[in-house]
Length: 278
Image 1: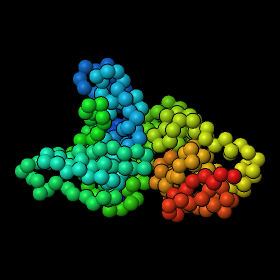
Image 2: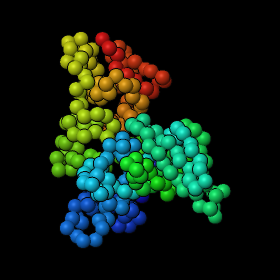
Image 3: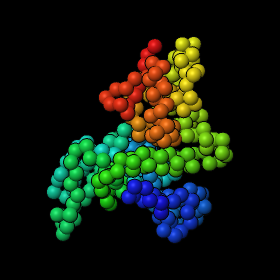
Image 4: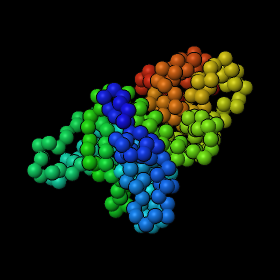
């Protein structure tokens, strides 16, 4: 496994070894036509909450599918927004900036004192199983831990992006892989923003905006197009990084250009931006 700031990342495309428990791109296809349960279904997959909220059964009674593939074991990162302790479990409402979902951690009666307790707004990583009950999705947590290094939030979103693009654009070759880093710019399903990349940026075709974008770098143009798809919703640094595949340093430099051109503005903090109506 690869280690980032104290946490370990699974390897994709790895065949066995210590990375064998991670999501293996292509393992689903390799097991097609076999009678036994497909290994890929049980592989741990990094994912965004929007993907979980949007996933559906391929047909009634089937497992929930993300990117067209059945998905059960997942890992996600987000903030604790609400806590509902009960006798047999604790339900955490987790928000990762793309959506919110309930995460249930069942209490072991013999180890009740070891059940984790997190303060509101704490960033946590969850490992668990995606399930539905009475038509409502939630994650049954095997393990939850607090995040000590915020870089892990960005790494997770980039990891989820990598797997999503590997599964949905692998057949498109290197050019599509590069275009995919722009947050599904070619019109495919996005895991962070609604479909129709650029549809919300009709103003981007206006002469005034083109003139202001002309002296800006390619990174700045990419971020402007990404923000234009958010339908006026402010986007945090982590969301922009996940949607564009850019580093935090490049994003901060590019947004400074856009701020200087009067194309965007900061909202609740200096790392959250929205399009400025001209």
